[in-house]
Image: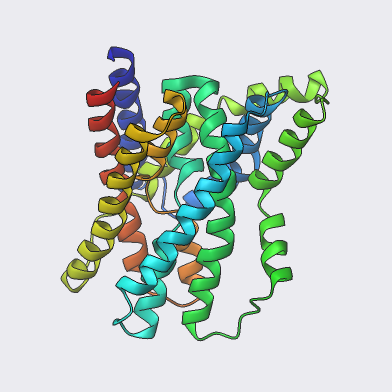
Length: 303
């Protein structure tokens, strides 16, 4: 437990450093866009390669993919029901934000520090299913209610998914492992070096993006949105943790994943579909803080 709390302390310090750098104008929030591209397209894929190369794919790991997709679909439907009385733009914005989780930037640094590559293996498989929700369902909901003439056919969704380098890396490396092939040592060695940067860069980026200024007119919508995500996620996560007959790492993966922050992808989606960017950004920041606190509490109670 001491090492667990120590990891949380280090994470808070790095996030705070990123926030201080932004507040002191040494770095600007727009700098985070370039940093995010480096993480998603270079350091995170490198970490995936190191973690999943030669992995023994167990039946339970495939179940994590299915659970992530089913739970994302459930949240998407629930969001449409809960926010059905809002105007079209507000309903689309909120329903778009409900499914999908921030695993690559938020969960991976904590999981890597606490459970190591064993934990990354489980959360990574959950993230495969989560990617289909984030790049598929959330995008479709957002585009439909935006009123824009957006192509919603199956081909366009597959094209968008194929542009996700982390998702493609998951699929390629896991496929190679299933058929018994391994990547060349030089690829693994270089990936090992690059992957070491993923944790600190991700935590710094979270700090750079932190912003808590918002209009009071948002309060009721924010409370409604946060209540939906966290009450459902926490209740279902605890229920599955107690009842499922799988190993502890599997159950911890679901418990933690269900209370992770909103996916960072909703921010560029809000720009693309002309939603309220300030609301989306502020609410996403609040979920980062709430998730961090909840995970720390759960870890100290259950680990």
